[in-house]
Image (cartoon, rainbow, N blue to C red):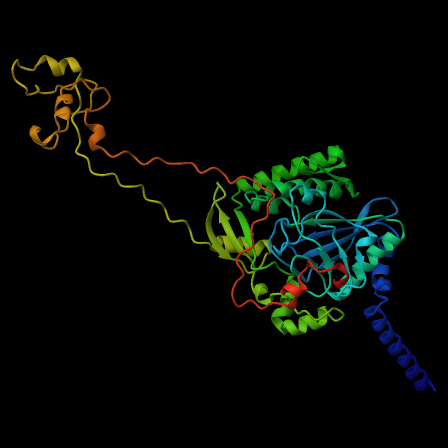
Length: 475
């Protein structure tokens, strides 16, 4: 009897599991539940499903965080999700088709939620926002979705996006009108800011840091507006604690620079993914990762998996922001980047430009001495006498016959000279002039992605028929 009961329980469990999988694959995906383990985590941290949330994403670290407000009104980190794929480079999205994932502050409303996505479920980030539009940036339907494939979006696994989608939905259902998404190039640490201090996007990133500092100090959502081509947080008023954090960070950045932290730029073959997924990709291959990460999405494969085989190129910059050396890093991890910089070839010392050999010239006596000893009717100059303050006289090389010199030059040879001989400008090459190269101006424009390497495998998301400019219902 006990065996029959166990068998019945197992059969019911399997049936329910199958029904749940079918239900959340189909038209009822908008009802994806929050996992029970996440409910337990919320309970431990004094949260519930109805409280507001904030999303924070970081390209270089390939992570997405969900923060939730607690009963005391402050936000706390609920969960960090490793990112399966993002494309392009560090920096903001500028135009349609540049493969750049947006950076900035975005608002996700219920109208931007898409349970009928081709990539399980998704939500639109809201690009271009007011800041992007102020710069004339183009692009549409930049999403956070499943499928582990990106051409400008933040791509999670299907399981991850299902959970994130459910957390956003429950907060919206409880009254949160818009979920703020803070999209960063990297974590706004002093170390990252010191290394990227000469990147063309640094002014834009420092502007983003203002909002990040407010959130991290106050544990509250910053209000965001746009004025003068900048994000403005809380009307431009920073609480004293936030201003103090900025000062402390500036001091730390200066100390790191003084200790020799290199200035760098990172150039990716095409974005990146979290180290955990890179290990799975290397160990089991793209097909296995695609099956486990994208079980409910349209089969589009892992986008450009060959671009994920290694880390980014590290461009070491001089003080003017010019490239000194470029070397491949094993990963985007800080230690790997510093190891790559340490392995970069040393600069060859630049030898000074050789000057043409010029015969030394005798010291020049005062003009009165030159003219006083010229015998009448004799065109030959009298011997030159050096004054006490003059440089010792060095015998000159034999001069060319007077007949071989131009008349004007022969005539000027008898004129008094101040600061050098009369024909110095005719015979002595000018010394090379050292020029100072000004530092590259900061800009909020993203660098153009490198030309697509030959042989990179693509997914169907990279084809024009499945590009990210498609209708949101197809996401």
